[in-house]
Image 1 (spheres, rainbow, N blue to C red):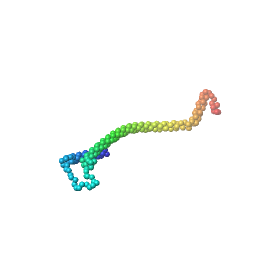
Image 2: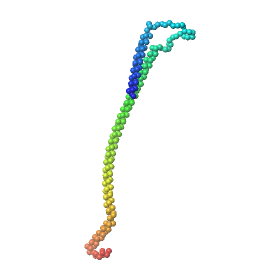
Image 3: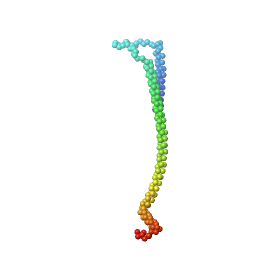
Image 4: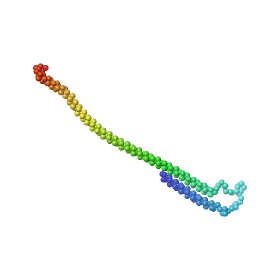
Length: 194
């Protein structure tokens, strides 16, 4: 878009400079022709005098003629060229500002991408560590569950056989008492009756 504007500017300036050059040449030719007094001829009024109520024909004093018109067109062309140049300078400055802002924005976005990439990498490392920790915790938890099951089974065995074992212990204790009594000289009959 900026290149298109610049091409239009170049064409406008070129056109205006060509116009000024051509009009200056035409103005110079006209000045050479009309400027020489030797070529001026005096014309006698042709025909009868103007009727009553009409004034004599004269050039309009306020009009400058063709040469003034050409000079005015030359000044307009120069003004148009100056305006186009100012407009081009403003457009170029705006374009340069836009490019600077865009480059600054690109640089900022690039830094943000780098920072976010670093954060992502750190997060991925933390995720891998967390997964490894989770796996070790799961393995440890499974081991604890297995140990708990083993303990539970042995405790269940002890609880289920408690009465049986207690009876067996009581009988064993009683048998030891009898053996002690026999060895101490006690009478065995007492034990048989009880």
